[in-house]
Length: 202
Image 1 (tube, rainbow, N blue to C red):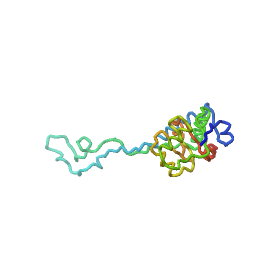
Image 2: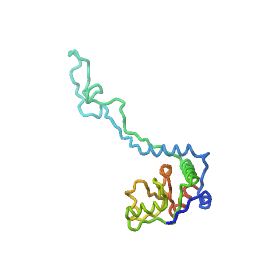
Image 3: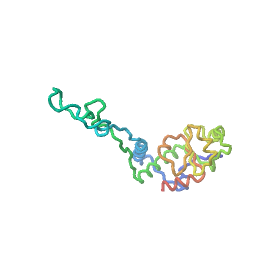
Image 4: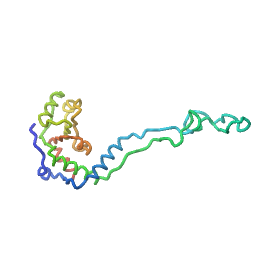
């Protein structure tokens, strides 16, 4: 698997649209912020006085006891009562326009190409499905860790060989996102993944 550095000329020949460092910074920030917000579950929840266990019975009569007047034991001032203005389940997700997503991808790809962090190979497959073979194959392409391998048709043996290697990631060209590219020291494009990126940046 001979690797070739992917240059700006190669990107132009493959119809991959890139932008320079003067554009797209805010788009990248907005998109990464959205990724992280979308991973939040928003599951924090407290019960109001209408949801805690207990009945509506008045704890003692209104007058004659010398105590303050109270209603049922589910009131917020009692231990075990409801919570006032506590957290409720909410949706933290953010929507990012398609044009912003595309601009962010163009910017990050442009930075990677200019820094010579993208290489291309014709094919990538580990026939025996062994982790040792996978590590050897990746190391033969790049000495770096934090490698993202982008391809459209990884077979089961290759995925099995890669699943225990924490510093690499197999991603399809259609699923590749900006955050994965930002964290990568080297990006390996396999075969027709180049044309997939050309479609996504067009």
